[in-house]
Amino acid sequence: MELRNAVGAVASLPRAVASRRRVKSPLRRELASLTLPILIETLLIMTLGAVDTFMLSRHSDESVAAVGLANQMINFTFIIFEVINLGTSVLCSQYLGARLRDRMETVTGVSLVVNLVMGVTVSALLCIFATEILTALGLAGPMLAEGVGYMEIVGASAFFQALQLTLSAVLRSNNKAVYPMMVILVVNCLNIFGNYTLIFGKFGAPALGVQGAAISTATCRMAAMVILAVILFRTTVRRFPLHIFRHWPREEFRNLMKIGLPSAGEQMSYSCSQLVIAYFITSLGMEALATRTYCVNIIMYVYLFSIAISHAGAICIGHLVGAGRWQGAYLMGKYVMKVALTWTLIFSVAIASCGSSIMSALTENAEIITLGTAILWIDVILEIGRPVNILFVNVLQSAGDVNYPFYVGLVWMWSVAVVCAYLAGITFGFGIIGMWWMFALDENIRGIVFIRRWESRRWQHKGFTMTGT
Image: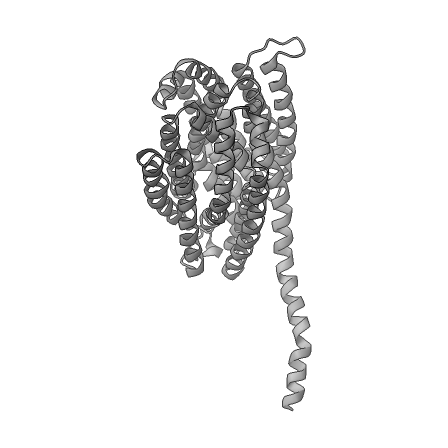
């Protein structure tokens, strides 16, 4: 009898494994179907910003440094929009998982209205105070003039980006990530053509240099916003929820802020730390600042896949949390971490191996080439921690554990990535190389902290739907 039972148990193993695979496969298919378009969209968004840098490298290293610093400040202000967008993504995912479509549409309307108001305000401030902002960040002389010219135009179009980000967040949460991808593909081609035409004065257009890059970027962001709005209201949201103007949905707005403020606070902490670091690097000279600008634009392609699969994983986990499937959410998080870490390290080693050739293609300055090549190898160590951080910041927020990533970032970013970077780079004289080692230390410490949090499962039962409580 025991032998028969043992044989029966062994015989049932393939069926059990197959059943487990059948349970997992729909989730993995959903993850893959989201990751690919998000990957392509994110690649194109990064390229949209990097095109200005790479094409201006044919203009001058000074232009690259000026535009790099201006873009960092502009991107910093975009975090204000993320207060709403992060909340939008989490709530839409959870409401869809709980089959509360009316509430999802209400959240969409509230998000668009709030980000429109904030976007117009930010655009006005960036345009009016461009000189004061860039002067405070350390730019002077010809670089200041170029940076101001760029910020006045691109900054004035910031509200287009605010609405574009909201529209993309809603479409992604509805498993329609392919639409933002297609829109950004078209816009990216337009931006490359516009940059080529306006920077270098082709096809009869004037050679505007930095100003031409700014005009092209601003125009393309406006086009992306308009196209995404048309797609959203034709495919996903039946009509704009005008009832929000009669009775402002306070509960949804409170939930958006409850998620968005600490979530954006984590990004705000990171971007503030990066601005302070950029100020430190500016004091090291033009070569160090240009090196940082080049390296940042190269390295972002290394962790591109991590960003894509982390956003996709966060949407899937948000659906699982909305449906109250906590064990599935836990296993999904572990699976995505393994995949993201593996591929990011592969990409990092590949980029570092070609570092000298890449840097030589961008500049003829020997000092910049040497510094940049060294930094790309240090980044291999940094990329052990970064994909873990990118993932768990996203998935903890999607599960409703929105405060923890903010506290972790606040403590470790500032104590290691800022203070220790200053000591290593400025006080002890190791320059930008010493700073990058401290960045690597910060990313890896935070990665360990986030893994421990996920394994503890203290993030469970923090959802915003009835089925997730």
